[in-house]
Structures are given as structure tokens and as C-alpha cells.
Length: 241
Length: 201
Figure (tube, each protein chain N blue to C red):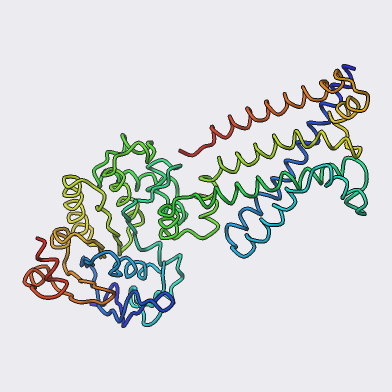
């Protein structure tokens, strides 16, 4: 089986400052890789290298076997879903138009987009009849993030990136959305990269956990192996459990 | 008196409309360009800032001897008014585009929008009320500045005002000043209403 995403000796620096050093790993289709690390560990940078919001200073990031620098960035991004903490919904579009935006950009027939949008809203637990004509400001934080997830799934991209999507939510809503995440990634067989600093979240969601510390990949392990760590950055995260 | 009042008021409105339309047609695209190009931003804003500091009467004076674009009459007056109206429109376009939430811009780019789509679908719609606020400020100041156009034969309500000053006639002075103030108030109210209607959130 070929990797969905591969990092090959990736370095990323801004001027003389090294943000990421020598990161290598493979992520296979259907897996969820959780990047765990403190603020400033480089985890968000690593995520942005995958959809070419950033490009490596050295080394290569391969998506479906092809270097991100060789992809047309627009084409690449349209087949990678992206969910961020601030959600980034467009305040001047209705929920339906927000979710249907990538289909719109891809030139889908409006009727096909409408059907897809309704299906997605129902899928993420927002009955379309209630929600499609509302605006983002009329939604709670948890509801907005559900819309964010629906939007990322719109054109059924094989890979989805999550940048601390549940960080700003209350624990109960967060737990609900984590369950939804597990259900969706399994049912739809998505490859996901999930950035967080929450150990519990990492252990719950991951097929594999990548611990990043000061720009280095310190550990790449299954949640079960991760829990046995007592040393280093991973040990420090375990100690907080 | 009444006939010439109506005539000069219409002429005044004409001066303002032409000047603001031109200023918007130049200023909005310039603002977009400045948003994309940081180097250009510094010097173009400096130039328009300097233009803004030239006293209106002096600017009209400077333009008179310039061939083709200068001279006496409406054309020169409109040119000077456009130069004045440019800065608020350009600056507000820039500020409006810069104010767009970085999270929204980032998610638009990450969704695979081209820079044209980002501008058309996200940045401009979210900046529209700030841009219109710039047009409103430009319009209101142009109403006042346009009264000076009469000094170089541009016509408009300034004709009454200059005549009033020359003959120490308050009636003439008010015949120029009152309609100008009314135009300013109506323009401010009307454009403010449109601004609120088009405000995205």
C-alpha cells in the first residue's frame, strides 16, 4: 500500500530559525496521525506543509506519491480538507453556501451541490432544514465547527487536516465532536492529520501519535505504545494524564 | 435668483458626482493593488498624502498653467477634486481588505481559491462597507472643496459664495453655503444607509 502523505527529511526554517528539522514519516490511507506537541513545537507548520500553504526549506512532502511542490497548489488544496480552530467560516455566506463553496469552485451543477450540502449537514448532526439558510454568527461554537467539518468533506477529499479544531470548545461539546470525528473518519475511510496539544484527545483519536518537540519528531508510536513512555517529551505529556 | 440657484446647485452636484465616480474608479483598484504590493503601498500613500496637504485654493492655482490637463474651467476643477477624493477611497479600500480576519483568508486559500477568487468572493465582500465609508467621506469633503472650483471658473455653488464675499452680501453667501450643506447632509445620510445595507455581518 502506498502512503497518502510522506515526509522525507523535511526541514523548514524562517531565516536562521529552524522550525522543523529532519522530519520523516509515512501516513497510510485511512489512518489518523495526531501530531502532539507544545505551542511552538512546529506541529501547525508541519500541517501547513501538507497542503502547500508552506513549502519545505529542504526535503520533500509527498501527497499521494507526488511532491507538494510538483502539484498545482490549487488542485492539491481542493482535494485536502482543512479544519482550523477559528473555523474560518465566511460570515457573509449562509451555512449552505459555506459548505458548498469548494463544489462551487469546482463548477458543480447547483442542484448537485445542494444535494451534497444537505447530505453533509445531516451527516454532521445539523438538520439541513434548520441550518442551511442561517449565517455563521447565528451558530454556537460547536455548531460552527460541525459546519467546518462538513465544509472540509464537501468534495469528498481523501485527506483531511485538522489544526486544533476542538481547542476552543467546552469539554462536553469537544467530546461529542471527537466521537463524531471517529465515526466519520472510520465510516468514510479518510486519512487525517490532526494537530493538538491535548493528550487525551491524541490518545482517543490517533492511529498513530507523532510527538513533536522543538521542531523534531521525537516519537512516532501507536497510542498503546505512547502510553508506556516515561522519558522525554512524550513522558512529560503522559505525566499530565 | 431661484433659477440660478437651481442651476448652480445642479452644476455643483454634477462636479461632485463626476469627481467621486472618477476617484472611486481609480482609488478602489489602486487600493487593491496596494493591498497586494507592499513596496508600492509606501510611496503611493505618501504621494496622495502630500496632495492632501496642499491647500485647495493653491492646488487649483497650480493646475491652471499646466497644459492639456490644466487651464481654466470645469475640467481642471474636476481634476483637482479627484485628486482630493482619491486618498480616503484608496486608504479605506486598503484598510478594508487588511481587516479581513486572517483565519478567514487562510481557510479560503486552503480551500483552493485562486487569488482572484479570494478577492472577489471573500475580501471585497467583507471590505465593502469600509470601502463605501471611504466613498462617503470623499463625497462629503468634495461637496465643500467643490465650492472653491468657482475660483477657476469651475462653476457650482461657489459662484454665489465668491460673489457674496466680494460684495459683502450675506444673502448671496448663504445661497451658496446652505444648499452645499444640504447636499453634504443628504449624501452622508444616503451613502451611510447603503453602507449599512451592504455590511456583511
